[in-house]
Image (cartoon, rainbow, N blue to C red; front, side, top):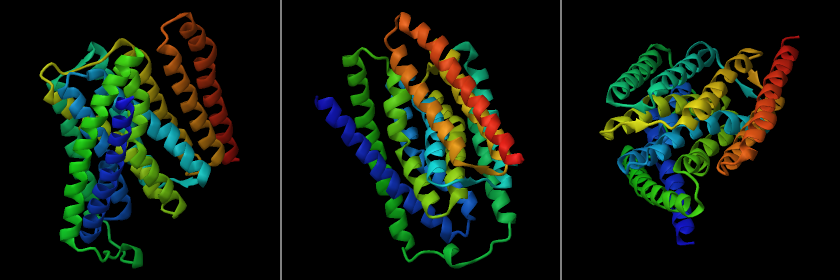
Length: 347
């Protein structure tokens, strides 16, 4: 029972630390006159992915590759299907041209790259270096692009009243809380998994992934309610790119043996992550919006995926039945439904 309280305490520290980290980072970004879209794709996205970074790094150093890779893959699936789904249900989301022409294709591309690197069931230091170089190139490109754009100063773009020293303190305090919270979360998650007879990968794909994605959830939903819908979507797309290019690369590099990829992750979870990324493109292109119906389909697909993970942990005949008669029809129905709504938006 103590493990569950420690797990909850770790989540609280992660969320609180992420909030301070994002507030400090976003405040400094505004002082530097970086555009709101770039803030969403970089500062906010990287800040809200800080829990995934600390959890995956600690899991990798502890030799828990399943928890490390499961956290990232699960978070990316959660970000697209659950958070975008919830945000679209709150209010239809507007999609900018940059997201369609650059950022979504990049998210799809890095997801494909992760799948290819996983084919030998390990992500070693060579693959990690390639991924991290991609992260540096993408981030550098966004910063260079933001500097070329003509900044339009309005009331919302003006720096806040918080002084730079206070913002730096927010960043430092947030990072400390993230590190300590991740330690509590990883240790308790491993103990819970062992007591329940569930693999660390399943825990990483579900509880830890959802827990570490709470900052993204709060940020996107609040941004949607406030009308900052480009930040809501940019936060998700940027977080997914950051998770693969930066977090997986660092997690694979710090572990001398690399990140081991399990057969279930390679055959099911990573393809589902890629499926979710690809699903974004036709939805985003059609009408440059994500309406409530599409958001509902995203959310329904995620719930079906989560139920499958729970059933799969039973390792019985029910898994085969559920796989062929539930999860595959759900995916087919989701695709057909999205195609219907996309076609309707174009009429």
